Amino acid sequence: MSHVLVLRAADFAASRHREQRRKDARGSPYINHPLRVAHLLAQVGGVADAQVLAAALLHDTVEDTATSLDEIAQCFGARVRDLVAEVSDDRGLNAAQRKQAQIAHAPALSADAVLIKLGDKISNIRDIIDSPPQGWSLVRRRAYLDWAEAVIDACPRSSPELEALFRVTLREARDALREDAT
Image (cartoon, rainbow, N blue to C red):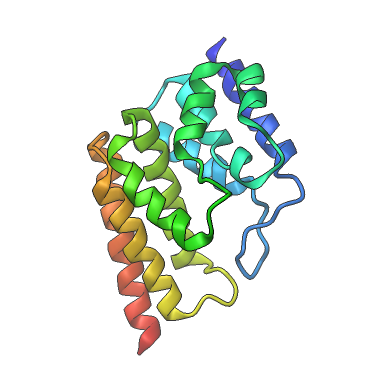
């Protein structure tokens, strides 16, 4: 029945993010991002744990929708809630403080939360390469890459495969931004 948990999480995330769009020029449906994160964990990281995949699908619901951690626990259990909590930013902080907090908290992340963090950053960097957020300057895109690298560098090691993909994707993004600058 583990596949049922993953499908329920996908349905829940799709419902909660249904009105949201990514910041790219096309305004892609937001749900594409958590789906990509879960897919990266399963395909590249070899993650088969339904609770980790469910948390990957739900990783932005508390941060970006009206969903509470209590609601995640009621619907998906304490472990999924705890993983979502580990990777969710404190919305009471401003953007700069949230970014700093991600770096500061990264060393204490569980191995499963690191998997989600890796998938999230790979997906976001891929978007910077393929379809950058509208209005993001070259400087801002470079700053995001530097910050994402600092977050991942501060995380405990968890998946050689996902870490390698993160490094390759980061290098591709930096190369693409160098080309954009010329």
